[in-house]
Every structure is written in structure tokens, then in C-alpha cells.
Image (tube, rainbow, N blue to C red):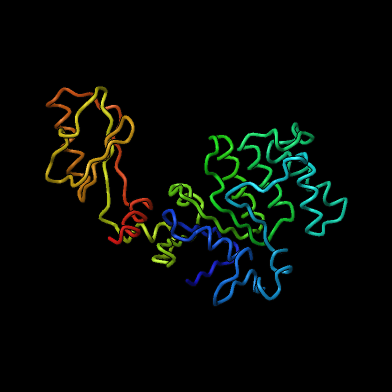
Length: 284
């Protein structure tokens, strides 16, 4: 594969389980050595000059690597020392990051007493303490509660605004859609598509849908119509895929009138990054 991540952007790396995302992260961070080819971080080859390359990056791995027998503050200070920050800068960065991540009140608690979400915050704190040129994140929001997930996403945005280039692997398609300027999709170790989220969506511009919710339960068979080629249940809503949303909306209005149904909500949408991802990885 060949990946070129532009400076200053947020690059999303998507793929199904087993496609090679984590292996790629391990190659980028020097944990694994490639059989051939090279990896350059900010122009520095990580295998010929690993220390210089690693000093340019902050890494948030899939599984937390923070030290459970150190406090939250000690983890950050310890990491900052690895990056060569002087004592005054370490103290200032630790104080600022603890406040940013809502950890000031827990700074003296041992990390092993933290929840998964809190441990992930410490992982993020350690990754961003040197204000890295490149921030590499491997599935950073998996298994997190809503509050922790939102905090992670906001921190990624802030670090990018402050100058960090972000490389992000994720299973969350909408997360990638909301964050990333460029996305690559990997399947069985090969890059099968690269582009902006909007560009990848447009590659399947016939994928549109109408989503509707009624005030009472209805059966899927109610939506059999020549203009609808797939129907999916989404919680209390029904999603109808179509090439002609205008025609389907009018049909649903007439259907509700005929069946005496109350429409609680109805919305149309163009192509989605999720649909592009599914069709690409399925080989469609």
C-alpha cells in the first residue's frame, strides 16, 4: 500500500475487521518493521532514525498503555519527560491537559482505579502532552460512554486546530465523516479507495433514502413499492432506499392518509459515507 497524509489534515483510515488497520498503525509507529518499503513521519524514516521520528508523534493505541500504579498527573509528567520537556513546561502542560480533559479533580488518584473511559482520557493526555506534529489514534472511541466519546472527538479537533496532523482509524463511519478531510478504505491489506468523504459519497450518488416514523407500529410489507429497492428498520424509524425520493415521499403521504397513520417525522438524505464504505468493501 501507499499512503500520503497531507500536513494539517485529519486522515481517516477505514476498513472491516482484519483488513490491516492496526498492522498499519504498528508499521507507522515503528512497532513492526516492513518487509519492504519505508515509513516516513514528517520526512523522517522511522526505521533509520526511529528516535527523531517518534519525537514527532503522539500515539493513542487501541488498548490503553497507561501505568495503573501511577496517578493521572504522574502518567502525564512521566511521558512529558520522555519527550525531553523541561520541568516547568511539564508542570504547565500537565495542569492544562488535566483541566482540558476534566481530570483535575482526579489528578492524584491511581489510574488503576479509573473506568475505561477515564483511562482513555489519560492515554489521550499522554499522547498530546508534547503537542506532537502527528497524532496517531487507533480506534480511540471504542467502548466509551457518550460523554467520553464526545470529549475524545473534541480533543482531536482541538489538536488539529493547534497544528497536529491526525491519522485516525475507526469503525465509526459517521465519526470519520464528521472529522476527516480525507479518507482511505483498506480491504485485505490493500487500499481500495481514497478521497474526501463527500467525494466517496458521490461515487454512489444514486444511493438516497427517505426515513419515516409513524405514531403506531407498522410492518415492513407496507413499504412494498416500485420506487423502493431496500427497506431497513432503524430503531423506531423505517429507512427506504430509492433513486427517486420525491416520488417515495408522495407515496408515503398517500399511504399515511389511506391507512390513517400519523407521521411523527420524515426526512430525505443523499448518499452516505457508510453506504460507500459498505459497497466498496463488499466489492460492489
